[in-house]
Image (cartoon, rainbow, N blue to C red; front, side, top):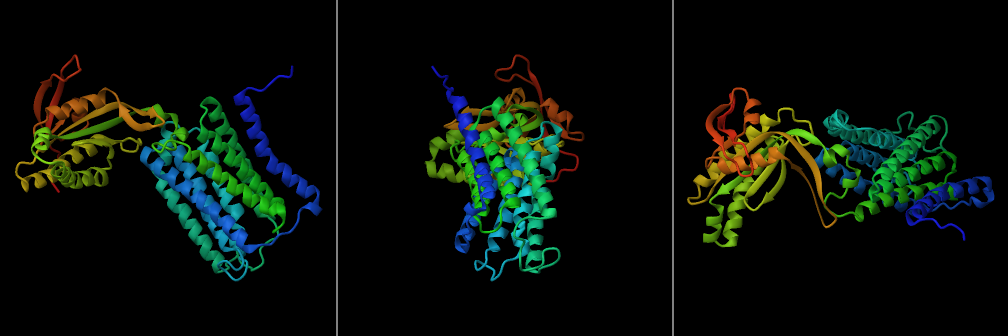
Length: 461
């Protein structure tokens, strides 16, 4: 009886064969030039490249939004890899004769190996060890990296249109040569490194997105090989266009089959999925909300909440950099230093709490009978966790620090801010009034608490 491959092994073998086939096809065409037919069809080229660029841009946007929301360096660098490919692919589409320009443009044509190779740098970087401070440093410069990449694309487009050296000349090269070959080879190596590392991650934690990412990087490496060897408009040349489209389609498909909440969670670093961090947590809810809801119809309750949140959330998020973890009815939970880039998280949380009370107090003064907020702030170590499964996932923080912040909010005076001892220790010069040792639900020992009246240089806005 012949041995049969197990299901997982068979899928691995099948995936490997599928990824090797494009290279086998390229080698066949190169070895048999008679098979490498010429088909010059400009509209097909334009739409093929444009579709690949759009798919890459969609992936870049989705991963970028997830990276900024969760502070994940790996997902951010993946986003930059696909953004680079999307931008330079778009420039290459413009180079299609008759599509936008009347004649070929050398700068737009060579944008392909440059864009893919630049994307390979970010791809390899995304697969490196980014845990701890390394990832935090990446996120600190992430916006600058993205801005620099967009600026480079803009400058490339201007230089190409102006036909500035070395991007001058109407006749683009038949195939990559000289420095472009070196660029392409570097990109091939880096994509190979990225693919191998993502495969290792997939082996340790099997997930569709990790496998899709590894496969996409293999296809992009193969596309760069074809860029070097394939003459324009031959079947081998068309092949690398198709390979790029397949690469971006794989990642888009991988994202599509994930649950819409935390769609890129499979790519998260361990510290994003289940790490610990020193943070400050702010809880706020309305004293008397239940009684108010009982005495008013749902539309009036909704209008009241929206009026409060419209003035409460902007200072918390925009002015002080908090992340709204959740809003449940009248309750608001905000975190500070979730990405590890806010060493002054306690001060930010305290200022946000004071500004929240100031802003909502103005609204309450104009609406007699409306309930008022109580706010609690606590600082300490928390666990960043990805909770749930397909059908309901969330990325949140848990731990005793969070629980105490929630309990302090319940003990705060109406219109006031209660803080725990760790937060107070991190606020030199804070003006406080002692609440005393509070018995908090679920805790064996009482917790010292204070009402925060102001900070040394705080002035209401």
